[in-house]
Image 1 (tube, rainbow, N blue to C red):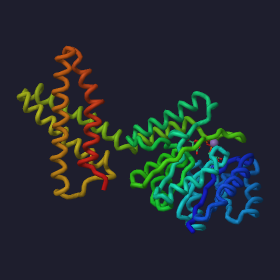
Image 2 (image 1 turned 135 degrees about the vertical axis):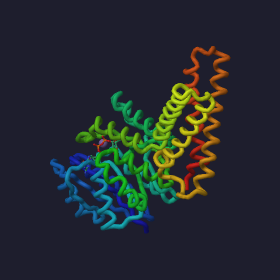
Image 3 (image 1 turned 180 degrees about the vertical axis):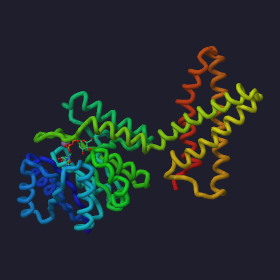
Image 4 (image 1 turned 120 degrees about the horizontal axis):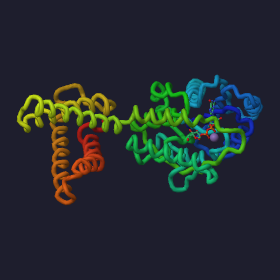
Length: 368
Ligand code: GDD
Ligand code: MN
């Protein structure tokens, strides 16, 4: 029988914790394939949460309490994971809110997905069948939906619909491997960090719909401003796509600057200046992408890896120069040349960026 541990982080959840623990026991009773344990990680609640858990431990032998300092949700999870590995050594770990927002009856569905081969199952509020509470205020709705869209597009991983969900089943090997990466994220952003790490490490991700219920007891501990800032910062610093776009911008500045120096200051022939500047930008883009944007898939450190890929990179880049040249000319013929820079911007955003990003990923910085 495989072991699974459900981690329940709590801070002042006296009104809900008993019902959550009872609910989990009832929900998993029927299952024969898994030995299920619960670890409540309580960060010094002041409302009697721990007393309730200690009382329930007498009834449920597979229930434990871990007492920690209050250092944020991410820290609580990391400490819970460590205790689980030391004391239980499970195959699978669940993350779950302890305020009744997550329905324990979904647990078997998560387990089924794992049995079918998934490594990381997300309870999603944003796929068919999933939902957020209808009575959430407009701010909270916009925030939750918006944050997920920013993360999905920021990482260009559109297939994962709920990045911030706190109801998940994750295989232990992923958590063990991810710990050095995620241990610096002590707050709610931890959720985004561990999922990003899992995807970059080719975990097989799956989603099941969940209906998120608003808490009835106690209050949310989320600090929205801090959460928004940390989440956006995380995406900004960890997204290949955003880095790739910045490299493109740097390339543009280099290209333009060098052309200007050659043509205006050195009075070189226009084609000479243009050729030198665009090739310099291509070289710099190639290395910046290799060591920064796509650092997690960087090329092997030998000439036989660099040379063919550098040639491919030149071909892709020439393609984008060609698309721009023809595109801007055609648009100017149709709509007049006055707005040529507008056509260029539109072409870059809607054609050049997706074109190069897809080709780089497919042919140069491939998944290993
Ligand atoms: N031990 C511990 N320490 N537990 C904590 C802490 C902490 O510092 N902060 C929060 N928790 C516990 C809460 O007691 C609750 O059981 C769970 O973590 C979720 O916290 P809530 O305060 O209820 O979060 P929320 O409902 O506002 O946030 C929801 O959305 C987030 C973003 O989408 C949850 O579903 C989160 O899991 C999710 O990340
Ligand atoms: Mn909650």
